[in-house]
Length: 120
Image (cartoon, rainbow, N blue to C red; front, side):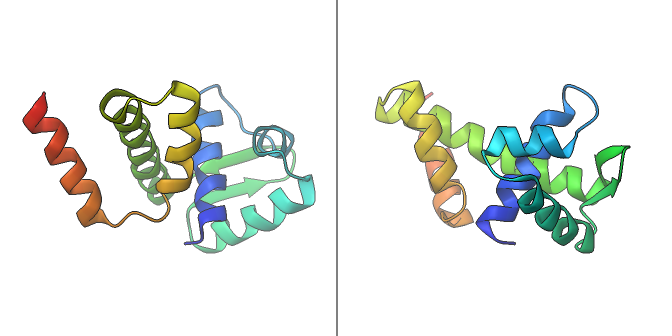
């Protein structure tokens, strides 16, 4: 899955915490146009990660919820690692985690987790 689609899936998951997810909400959260959101939603729907019905909103499938949860957990871990271990500000940690979550290998993440568990 592309970085962009991961960002859309993560946004849908985050917004779903507050209830129904609308295309407008996704566009505002990511700072993109509604047509861009619709294109991404179609791609995610084709992958079986969500269902989108016009006027009813966006709902993650079970597979989509699992993928989104993994992305959110990776993002949260990286944010906390950067803030607590590296010592950068919350704002910097959030921005950098958003970039890093897409490119770090699972091996690297596991090593980072091991550092945290050994020091904690």
